[in-house]
Image (cartoon, rainbow over all chains, first blue to last red):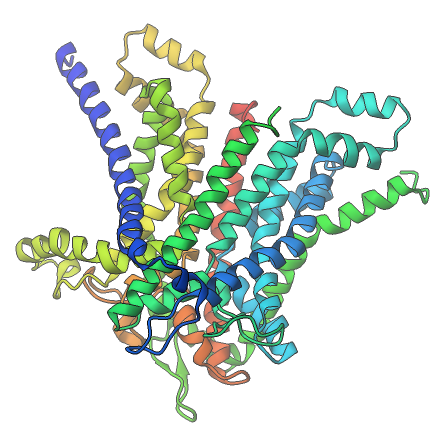
Length: 279
Length: 314
């Protein structure tokens, strides 16, 4: 029989180990944040966020086109992906009690875990090759492939939290089911849907791999839908691998801007969903 | 079912149609990759999977995906070896040990870990983690255990080990949040029963909770494996990117290549219509099949456990 003291000791040891796990996991997070802040902040200036990249060694330049590109991508992707995702979610939650929906739910879950680079290759073949040029649109399509399953899932989960009595009350007044869904159920669940959607947008804002073969990258500002475009994640990747310290520093600056965009979406969402939109 | 032409039915059909978008994407992806990799599969057949050479020069083309498959598997296994114990520790700490006041901030921090994009971890890995790994892990290992094949070679920092570590960091949020749900789904009556016969917290966790949630935790691990296999940018930036037989990960301190980093680095250099592009498609097809298999397994395991035992979690 093992002594009680030894068992207590093991228990203590285990507690310390678990605490250590938490600390070890938080170190990379804090270190990444700190490095991005320390190395990125000196880069920030009006010129840095508005100017295109300059000539190496001559002028400093900036990452204006990358910021613009990322904002365009976020916008286009939202236009394509959010309606599709929300409608999928509505079907799965409101009409989802059948085999077809069960299958679609599973497919959706699988797609949500897809390697993003594979999506990039698909869109390259289907969109870029058939159009004959790299395009912001191709990038947005690739990103919406990633966005749709996430939005569908969070929409479904939020709609399922709406109590049935609310649906029944609306239906009892003679309101059609589609009207009930769109004007009663969806607004009731809006906190969850908005939160989930914004988090999904934050996720795709930092996606890099599928952009490599869809928007390619560009030194200049947006030049139309038939031309390559730049984006922050691409710029970070390319700058980081350059042998010039000034470009590497620009990469850190771009990383800071990207993190600011993503964190403001993340934190903003939490504040908003607790406040006015919250139930 | 009564299918009258009404707005209600139209709405339902529209929603049903759009709900298929995920399936359409999946089918298009599968078809595109299969179609695109046909030339290389026809030319090299099974040798594409077990070959190690990669030469895109016209007339002398030869493509083998084995080094990159191994690179993916080895880095992902390192990620699991490091990431899973950490994630389990975090999950157990959050559910069973942490006081309420610190539970929320810690789980928020762990979630934040998932919010950072891959390319930013890559940047951090390239300029910070790389030197930590080289100076504090690899150099001591190579001095004291250099005779061991896995620790042979000169520590450089841009290699298999660093890639595995960065992957471990990136799978922690997934694995820990799923295992947290699994641990939470263990009914309290189990805990109460165990405590009432005098078990310590460690014994309760080890003998009851871990065995009760076994298959769910296994699902969480497999889900983490799926994440690690598909991860691209961070790995691309720290793995050193070698090509051909040199990319076979024989030592932790050797630069290598994963399937996804190979594609990220080389895809744009291939001309459409050539065998080289087809070879990249073939690698992507292998990656896709591997990831599909892993994720289906994981999902079946996780949903089964949470449905049967959790009830409320679903």
